[in-house]
Image 1 (cartoon, one colour):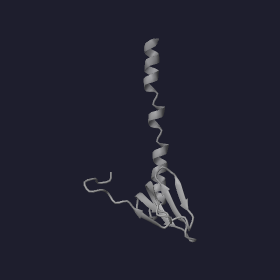
Image 2: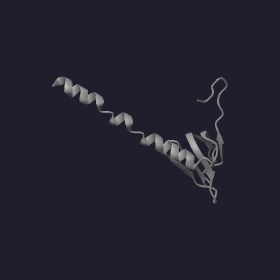
Image 3: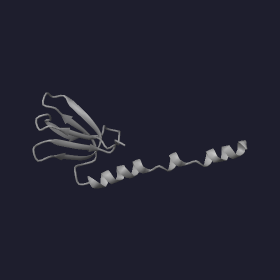
Image 4: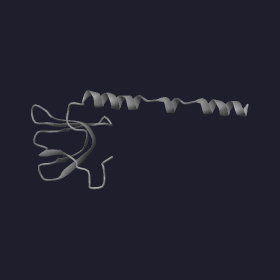
Length: 99
């Protein structure tokens, strides 16, 4: 009976077959594919401080000047019109392809 339990344990692939997270990321990328370049961004605040947003898949400036970034992990960043000065994609370092 010990072998039977081992076999049952070995055939339980529930964790390995859950691909929901991957599907959601793909759907998000498709939905926001026309909204800026994908990658890491640096947002410069009015006081000169910077914030790095990793894995952005959508970057938009909204109608009233808000900066909206969506990441591949489903996080949303929204900066009020006067709370940001600039946003630019991070450039890869020499010798590092950025992958």
